[in-house]
Image (tube, rainbow, N blue to C red):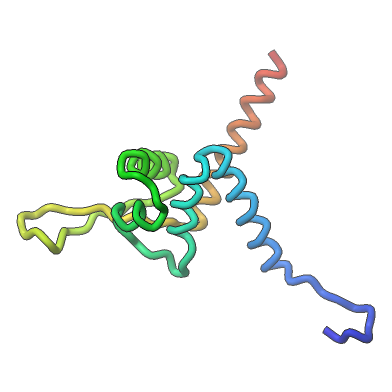
Length: 128
């Protein structure tokens, strides 16, 4: 604050958010590749998280339809991305479409669970 003094402070909340984001990005990039990380970043960049359809995700992340669908459903199965079905406005025949979004706490919990499970499995292998 005052450049003449020898005192300084750390914004712990900002530092924690920055470290968590860096760790999550690293884990996701190693597990899903750059394209999977792009999808997660797109879905988590706005606050509050926006619900978007898969066509928008694939266009914005520059991912092909087949590969994008595979990545997106992998993220949903793992609990990283959430899905909500809503009635389709274009058709009145009762069809629905899926909107995808990220809940930051759920994302962190899912990845923490995977890390702890991996750690437990590794320790079990080392004991055997």
